Image 1 (spheres, helix red, strand yellow):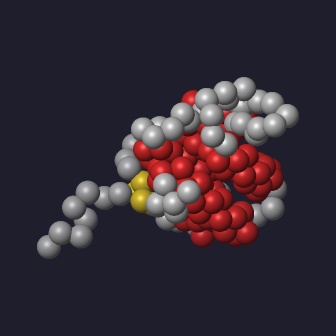
Image 2 (tube, rainbow, N blue to C red):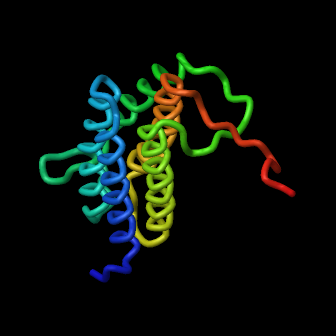
Length: 166
């Protein structure tokens, strides 16, 4: 298989997202969020295996590893939990703030790229729809996690439209 194959591109982007998530975890304060994101890293290996496995039978089995709804549900529950403690957004925010938040924003943007690669791969191969949902929800979790980290620091960095115009 060519390294330029859409399947390989998606696997590579998921791998890069996993590495960026590892950097974020390394600068996070140890605790529940770091533990959650470490389990997400494991999920990302599952996701890579799912993408790498050809076919259109997406049911979990003993011969193929597939992302399952329970993994999505865990992400959704974490989104709800962390979002409940945040103030509603009144402005777009810049991807920055505390070092761990900035690293989470970077991981989020790489996960978004992985999602685009996986959607592109759909044009050439069957893709597990639960895997697509997982990667979509993961980027939302990372956004909310970055906001949660910034809440314990100096807060979100707000976008000021036109602030640097002369």
